[in-house]
Each structure stands twice: as structure tokens, then as C-alpha cells.
Image 1: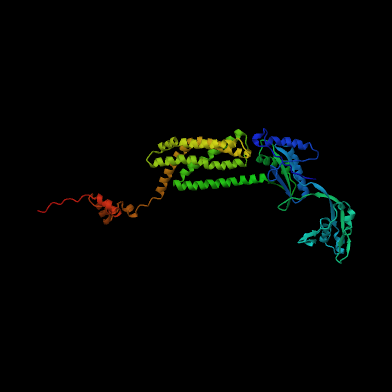
Image 2: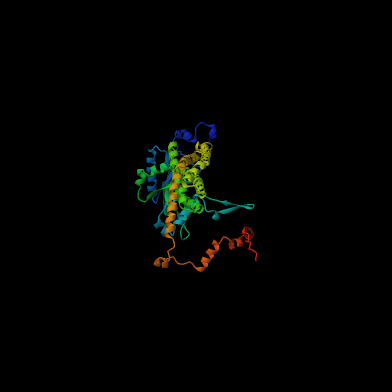
Length: 474
């Protein structure tokens, strides 16, 4: 069997009327017309669009399970040209040592293998004789002609050195014959591996294909000692989805900590983060309208969306908080924030969505990969902006009232205890004499403020009342 790689260079995307996905079936049909040809497409890493691995210790069971899975995938319309990428069996000469005869002649199995190796491919480089050509040494490799391998008598007459130094024919210590075996053996974690790869039909993604493969009877009824594992892009996508939850949780916690430090409150940051679920609905709606499946670019777009959506809520809540600090009532403050911050919020949202439109239309080279990410961002931005202007003010009012209620309750719980003496007698204890004297001094309008004189001597001197004129002594 021979294997070759065929590279087809397409013209620029804007110079042709057919996409790559439309051209692939045409090329498949032309290659299928050639007898005894099997073909499939690979990505830039040399792997199929979707690949799963069949693993086990028994090579025969692994190959049989892979062939069964390939047959069932060919009957499913969402898969295009599935194939089991197992190595093809090829003819070979098998030499099986006779251990009892070899032991009688003090011949170890490695001596038999070394004899065959030297005769077929030559000795190792360190043991080869060298031919001196000036300053160079050219190794001299001696081996049988390739045509001699077709004659078993030549192989049988190879001499094997015994333990006493004599030599015997190879066929006296080994059985020699023709057979067949795999051309290559792939392993994963020291287990035999056979990959089953496929391309996805138009309109289907890797995630859908992985779910369909796991539901096939060939996967549910694998032989004992044989298991299935995702490899290639499917394995990478699984790792991305697994790390998505942890990355999202870590990002939200970091944003929450920063907002708590900035606002000095726990309830206001929760109000801001409440806008994040609003964007998810927009992402789902945009994917449904465009018939786009959830893929790795969509996950990246959701991560981008989290920071953009939080910014809109921060603008609303921060403006309302500043207005309340200046004495404006709560309801009027949040209404004023919505009225004055609606324009910048809408302007930034429209600018971001407009910038994502070319990517969503899949223009340019590699635009098909970026399109799902742009669609997710546009849908989440538009929906979250509209809902934030309606939902966040209402939630802010509730959370602000809850913040004041919890604050009063907390102050009541941690208030200082009353004096035991005052509780027993019912009388208020008298203030110390020096405290009364200090209060009396403060009540006098003409008494100078020593604190102000100490802090601002020049200003206190200017603000002191003019001294009273004393009547002249008679």
C-alpha cells in the first residue's frame, strides 16, 4: 500500500464563487472515480476534523471495533467520508525461533535477530567498516539484495554463530515462512491505538458529531479491554469546555472583588453582575436565528462578552450612587442615571456591534472560524443592553433598600451595651466635672477655640472677636 498527500491551492476567496466546503464534495467525487483509492481531508496538523481513538491491549479487538464503528458512522448523514485510520496489513517474512533447538546449541534469540538484521538492513553504524576518502570516512554497509528476500532458501541458509564458535543454518534453529502484519503500530499510553476520523456534513459541528458517536451501538458495546477516547480537535474542544466553567468563575470572582473594593458594598456589585445572565439569552437567540452550533469560537465570544456587559451596568450604578451622595432621592437618582447614561451605553454598544458585523459575515480568509464568535458577541450585546436599561434600575432599587436594611440590622446587633449601674438605678450617671467645665467653656460665645488656633494660627487670629472695651476707672 502506498500513501500520498495531495495539496490543492484555491484562488482567493473573493475571486471564486464556491466556498471550500462546496468544493470538497466535487474533489471527493473525482478521486472516488479512480479504482482502489481511499481519500480524506486533514487539517493543518494532519488530522481529520473529528477523530476518536479506539484503545486496547489486543490489536485484533481494537481493529475490529474500529471497523465496526466506521461502518456505523457511514450510515449516519451527519458524517462525511468516515474512515478507520488503521495501518493496512502487508506481506512479511516471519522468523520464529525454535527455543529448544537454540538452547541445545547455546544460541540466544538476540543472536538470531542480529543475523537477520545484518543480512537485511546491515549492521549498526558503530560496527560498520569505514573507507577513508581524504579526511572523510565513508561507512561500508553490506546487506542482501532486496530481491533476495523473495527467495526463502537464501534466508534459510544464513549462518548463525553458536556458543562454541561454529555456525549453523538459520532454518535449523528457526521456522521461516511468509505471513502478513501491520505496516505501522500506533500506541497511546502503551496501548494499541486506532483512530477513526471523519469530516462533518455542512451545518454540523464537532460537538454534535462527538455526541452522535458516543450514542452509537458500536461504542456502547465495545469488547472487554477496549475503550474509546477523543483525540485531535475533539479532545482540545473538550478541554476548552471543561475549563470554561473554571475560567468564568475565576473571572467573575475577580470582578466581584474589585467592585466591592471600589463601591465599599457587597450589594451594589451583585446588582452589576446581575446583567451577565441577560447576555446569555442574547447569545442563544443569535445562534438559533443564524443556525449556528455552539463551538469553541462561541465560548471565546461569551468570555469576551462578560467584560463588555459589566461595563454598561457600572455606568448606571456608579452615576446613581454619586447622585445619592449629593442628596438626590434614590428613585430620582436611578431615573436620572438611566436618562443621562442611556446615550453613551447605546453608542458604545452599537459601535461594538457594527465592528463585529464584518466578522459575522465571514468575510476574508479564515472568516468561517471567526463568524460564530462575532454572532455570539452581537446577540449578547444587543439583548443585554436593552434589558440592562430596564432590569438593572429595578434591581438597584431593591438591592439598595436591602443594603440599608441590612446595615441598620447590623448596627443594632453590634451596638454597645448600656451601663449596668444606669440600668439598675434608672438614673443617668453624672458627667465628670472636667467634662462639664469643658462644655461650659464651649457654650461661651466669647471663648477662643484653642483647637483652631493650634491648627490655623493666622486664620484663627483673624477670626477672633474684637476685645471688649472696659470702662475707664473713675
